[in-house]
Image 1 (tube, rainbow, N blue to C red):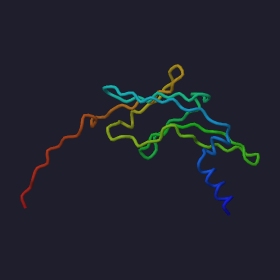
Image 2 (image 1 turned 180 degrees about the vertical axis):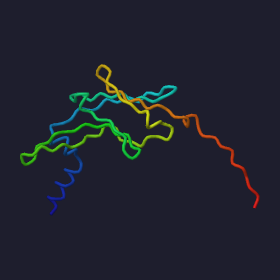
Image 3 (image 1 turned 135 degrees about the vertical axis):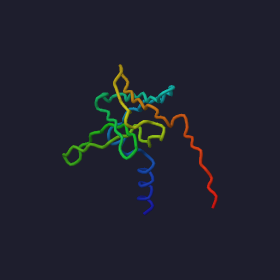
Image 4 (image 1 turned 30 degrees about the vertical axis):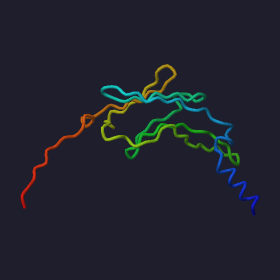
Length: 127
């Protein structure tokens, strides 16, 4: 039984998907801050820019691509997430856009009116 336990420890301590697939390149991502927006610049060596997907789902911004693996003679596509986070309240979700520039994928996250904070005076009622 000890032998099985060692194998399980080994499997959980390594990135099995990465090893089985022959390895994947480390994405290069920078988050830049500007006066009116944030910008994510992304480059994934070995992956075509047009194979990277950007989507907002349930207030989550995801940037990902698919890794193809053949199992039992069937092609299986497994998503590899590069970025997967909630969109902050001060980003205008409706205006998020993406473009290709040279070798970079650029995702622009424009600020909304809440970016400068929210202020509301609350009246105090007497009971």
